Image 1 (cartoon, rainbow over the protein chains, first blue to last red):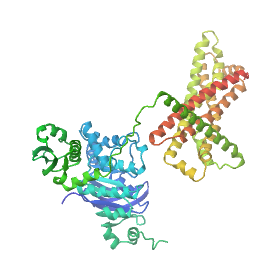
Image 2: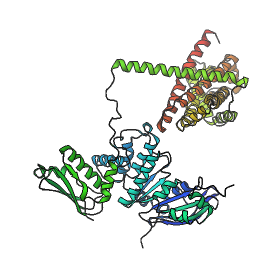
Image 3: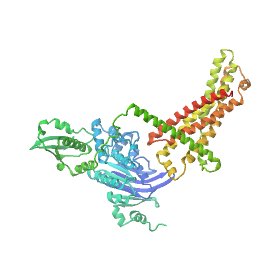
Image 4: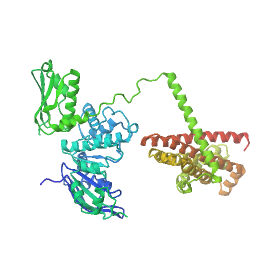
Length: 252
Length: 376
């Protein structure tokens, strides 16, 4: 049996004394699109921060390819980070660098490619996200949607094994959002990339997800895990049913 | 794992690129131009290029980059590139990368404008900047004038935050700098005046120097760096996160809600901090004078009071008031003028400090000149 790309065991997430989520147990298999869904404030983005090692669990363990990133030494940690790509909610492009420099930086840090080869990889990545010819622009000079796409080009610069997306479609027009979904599916199909997406965009969830995890803000734990269509047809709780059918019945 | 390899073969007007091995960004992979250069004779009459990927192993973006190079070559040579031999995933990714055409125009401006154009643009930009500054000054003056009438809704909580930050929060740094300035003036006085047997008069120098000049000036410079930069960074961050736009679209004046509390806060605290700096500076000067000269504290204070009058102290306090106004003005103006991006906030903070200190020194010179004219 192969090791899952990510394994979460008995995770408890806290802000200070406040417990956000508890008893989280799940694994993300290689090459699947795994969606973390839930209402606003349910802790989706916080869970993502735990998965990418930005926040330490209050209790429990998170294993990336069988390794606990937080317990690893600096070199191991860097090697693990090399295999990840993250698209942050607002892009988080470095404002002092052009789009090309933003995408080039991880390549300069982690590969031995020469300047010309890096330039070509950067051009390819920008082209993949529909930004061919925008390399010389600074983030401040382009729209929010374009910034997000450029941030995706940076996230896929190193052909990561696991890609994390935090609310990828927020702030995007429907065409760009749909194109981004296409790209997610394509990255999975072509490179076998494992993709973890935090979103509450139902259209996107049904289109891209192989499995989805539901974080219930009331129960403060996960209450559903499975294919979104199955969860919609056989919801394990009213909250999951309401979420997946955009229904407000039962709410006072 | 074998490295990615490519070979070029020619047959019946068709070039065949044979791909093999594992292609990875981690390792060196072939370049299409090098491949062509190595087999010049093979491609002379070629009309199409096909790819044989039957021996291709694992691959990543390095293969796509190679195929992009091939596409560029084919476009230049007017040769058809037949992608049918490629794995389906590669074809789809290449199609995706070409789905949006390249942006036609460059981000750079094409030609450098002439000297006259640049001079004109610079003059217009300076005029626009003056206009903005005057508009801002006018808006602040109107809002301040309307405050007692109750027409302006200022956030008093922000005002008290500024007051707190510029009172107890600023005391440590003001104490340190004022004490050292007092010590330096006293050293200067003792060293120079002792040569003429007039070391006693160093108390004049400390009192006169701190109350009229250095107390207000040093406090002003410290606060321009501390509070002025803070105002600019705070308002600049609000500008780039559209918080200020949110005020405007709600019909709420950012001048009333953001600028006025800050300016009034620093305006109130600067004269008080100046008085405090005067006191600390004189104490520092007295410590030096007492340790180096045969003087008692009573003699030092008595000597100082013979030369220093209440108007000297009031002039210093007045300067503190003016400097407070200028620090708040520079900080808030530069904050509201912030451009886009995180670096713009840094630039706003820097220019707030530069403008604040320049205005303080300029104002100090003007006030001294007027004081001399009016015999104060």
